[in-house]
Amino acid sequence: STQRSDGCRSDSPGRPCRRRVPDTGHRALRSASDVGPPRVVRGYAPPVAEPIDSLVVKLASSIPAPVRGFVPTGARRLFAERPITRTVTFEGHSFDFTAPLRTVTRAQQRGIESAICRLILAETPTGGTCIDVGANYGFITRVMAIATGERGRVVAFEADPEIAATLAAAAIRSGLTAVEVVGRPVGTDHVRLDEFRSDFGRVDVLKIDVDGPELDVLSTARKLLVEHHPV
Image 1 (cartoon, rainbow, N blue to C red):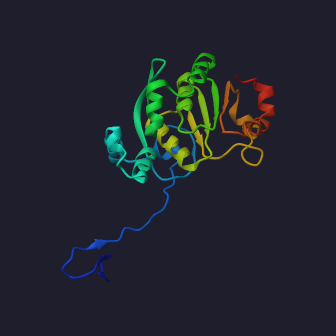
Image 2 (spheres, rainbow, N blue to C red):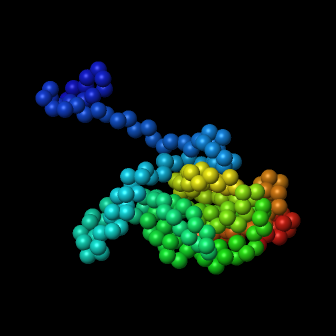
Image 3 (cartoon, rainbow, N blue to C red):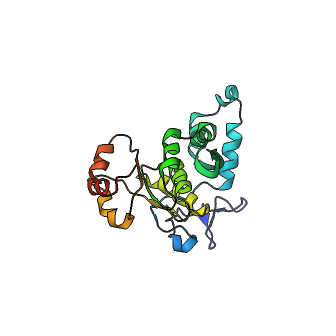
């Protein structure tokens, strides 16, 4: 093949040009001061799925189950794992939630960790501070933001950089001024919650869901627990 001066590559003069698109890699999330009101966004990952992806996922999910079995497994997995945004209603509160199709569907049908979310709504004072360790795609983070209101603060820790970026981008789009996303794990060898103690002020609610090392996370918050007695 030959390459022209304009960057196009063609196998023969009679065929249309094929322009090479450079691989730019991951795009860093901009800080809150660049894009809107939320305070601090930490973490890097590819951008959230574009609207066309949401349409493709919606179309794929509408295929009847018997027919869906003929779709290649890789394609089904790709569609299922791409984040989409849908409106979810929980305890009378409606909000946009961005997550893979299966997670969004579960949230729409019965919520996520509903008992914990109801406790948060009942126990969090307006203007309070909540910490969500192991935020995942942020359903509980969103409930915390509803509970604290615009004058409150929610700090969400998520170790997976792509999921953290999805949550951060969703918070920016929704104008959640109360939410900060930290794309780092919490633990004795990572972020220690006690190091954030003075920055948090009073902590009203602490939720931890890290699939196993919860005690390790708690060991980094000894002073926080003694001083603030969070729910």
